[in-house]
Amino acid sequence: MKGENVMNTKGSKGKAVLVALGLMLLFLAIQAVVGLVASIIAPIMNPEAATDAAAITAYVMSVMPVVQFIAEIVCILVFGIWYYRSYVKKAKELRTYESGFKKIASLKDIGFILSLTFAAYFLAAVIGWLVTVLIPGSGDLFSSLIGAITDGNKTIGMLTVMLLGPVAEELCFRGVILQKSKKAFGIVGCTVLSAVMFGLMHMNPVQSLYAIPIGAALAFTAYKYESIVPAMIGHIVNNSFSMILSNLVKEDLNQILALVLFAAFAVLSVVIYRSIPKVEKFDESDKLSA
Image (cartoon, rainbow, N blue to C red; front, side, top):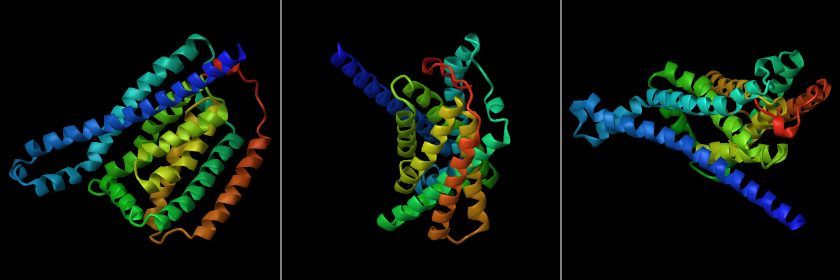
């Protein structure tokens, strides 16, 4: 009987990993389909360059911020509806629903979320720097990918990176994926699985590796508060801070300074977290994000 339970547990964990992988691939597939549609429409919108492959490529790149903007909106609709119907609506029916904003209404909660977000950001900065040192050219690839989104229509590009991207990714990774994985894992397993899938989704060495600590911090807050709202806030703050800092300061962040700031914010987040009053939790099976 004990052996059977172990096998069932392993099976459920394996299934949870496969489901998470499938959801991550669905997220990428939606983005790819939107990009494919844009490449098909490009010759129609720019007939003068229809026979010139280089001109078509240049045109597609020029509208890439808009394409990514649309892709994020589609992801928000798909995963937003999925998340609401599967979890929020169910929580309301069971009368266990509580607004995520209400859960983080205190200054201590906001302070914890922000300090943990900045701790993850500065740790990610160090990891990103190490990747560029160990994998030559990875930094240039990362810069070109970010440039493809933010160059051209800067307003649309910035809005995509700072707002729509975080919302779409949280609905998928800390929303649907995290809820699915709760059936098989505790907080550690859910955090690791969500973070790894979040890293894989970025599909380039720098982002894939530095996204893992950020994804872990976001997953931890989503799990602890039983809501994607704090994770969304943390993600928006992370991306916004990164974009603003890169525009204000052209030099790379000093790695020693980044490590010091990581340690400072990590300690601060632990201190604040320990000071937050413990609240009564529902049984694990009843945990539904709001």
